[in-house]
Image (cartoon, protein in one colour):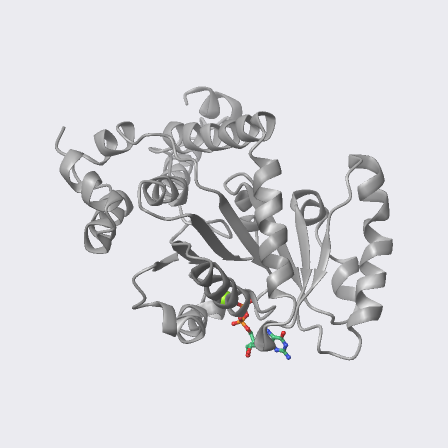
Length: 299
Ligand SMILES: Nc1nc2c(ncn2[C@@H]2O[C@H](COP(=O)(O)OP(=O)(O)O)[C@@H](O)[C@H]2O)c(=O)[nH]1
Ligand SMILES: [Mg+2]
């Protein structure tokens, strides 16, 4: 197997080889399928950190890395940002926020743009995450901006999903997508230094009460002030505890089922392209023989 040697290197902590193999997957270079098919199943906990832009996700991740490294852990971080023009500064921002870690031997940070998959995560994120599992990391963190479908997708990828919110306007919570409440294993109210933080947390608890009742589980709501490191210790401990719980077989299986579903979906749709569909439809309509259902039946 051509990948045996590079995989050994990744296991031994070779970041250059890791970066190279991530590119192989990203660009679907020759042999990438055989690479994936030969990856042993990963067992490291994957933490998804999601929430609106500016909530302080990168700052929190930066502090969490600090805590984890202090505890002797090695950490891999994937920063996923939709390549929307509104977020172009974000990746650069993350670089600044986590700059001290880019050269640290126990930390690996990779930014991915979510090319094309509108509002979703990076199209190859499942596979890249699986590759990170082969490294010498104890923790894998994925930071993703909560727009479009990305936070729903993160829940299918991460063992533990933390939704980061900020104490701003009650309206923000009211418009919080229903899905967001369902996917959270943990809520983090960051920027607790703001005067209306306590009010916000109480409001959030009230809003979530029916969700907790329905799912019969209490989802922790933590407060943090990332910039001053406040609440980070508790966040770190809570994430650890949740990872231990979420490793239960049932949850594992449902996470794997979700991954399988999305990979099958991508595989089945790989040759379907909206522009091509539009061109075909145009042609058939011009010929006056178009019927939507006969058209779909061909696929
Ligand atoms: N006041 C305050 N500002 C914070 C806190 N955490 C982060 N910020 C600031 O909020 C801004 C956005 O943070 P960032 O981590 O990039 O947010 P992200 O877009 O969610 O990754 C930055 O200017 C941070 O310095 C906090 O706890 N309190
Ligand atoms: Mg960020």
